[in-house]
Image (cartoon, rainbow, N blue to C red; front, side, top):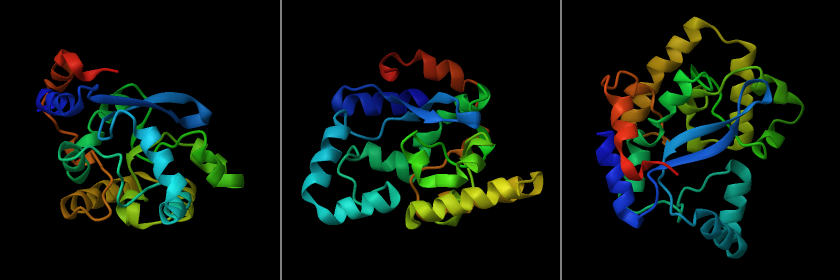
Length: 206
């Protein structure tokens, strides 16, 4: 399956199938967060052009750092991967490397840390997670301010029981595609040959 996904992305525009972006982890340590690429190779230029001429899109971006109708997403395969949560499957390797955990705040960029203000210590105290309170509470349907509130609440009162509850809640969220921008947790039991399949795919890596 991983090889098939790699090839479908590569065939779309000839670009790499995996996207690596620097995120901030526990104690402020940066790491390379992995995802299947779902956006055009020139996505940053596409975004800059849109925000420079569309006031509504700019306002939406400033509020949530997301766009409901995102022109950067690859037609077909990009939308499919996001809706089915397969785009975040490679982050299992981040978990295995110790960059991330199964449950926690979603990884953010250094620029996005500004949104946490004086509460940034709550985010930095934990490893980012594959899923978390934000994902099961609406995700793209919430503002970034609400995301911060949920992360702070989780950091202030996290436990094994709460993690198990969030993992259980993740599955129906993915299945119903409610506010989905991608969750890979339901795929944690992927076949044992996943690692070999991923690294065997020629056009996968950036």
